Length: 183
Ligand code: AR6
Image (tube, rainbow, N blue to C red):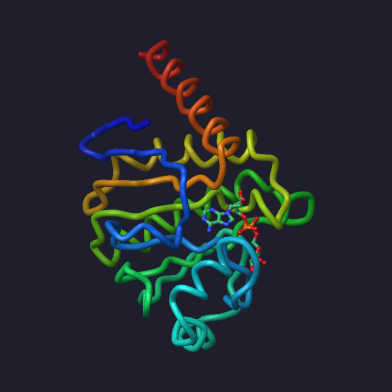
């Protein structure tokens, strides 16, 4: 599924964030220490090789909602943007911190003048954010940012598994309906 607004395309895809060779940056669902871990961080650091962790070391720690840019090392992408989402039920207000994580991820992409960026569903794994609520925050935030972007032209959500994809598809369809109703 995809929609285009203000010259920017938002795509939903099912897949693996470490296998997105046609985007300038993939976003890592990072930990504060910017170390490898499970889920997205494990997949990205494994594919990137040890040089990524080395580059990350002096940039850590980061706070929930922040995002930092590194190079992609052995990934097919020139860059990785490391975003720290909130731990659900601990880092509050969780919706504002999750929205900041997407906004800051896009800001890093703009600063580096990238044209395409792929996000995973940040905070919805180890950090426990319910998928439906996270999808609403993530998609709404990105839709709000799209008209302001100057460099980024493609934003892809890479969803892991059928359920994550379906939740995002349904949420985006609902947001589109609201947008039409609101004129
Ligand atoms: N590609 C795309 N999505 C994936 C992949 C993948 N290869 N693997 C998992 N997902 P998580 P978080 C989905 O836990 O909740 C790490 O250990 C997954 O199903 O990666 O932000 C870090 O070190 C879920 O829907 O990120 C941190 O400590 C979503 O991506 C902590 O987990 C996010 O899951 C970050 O937790």
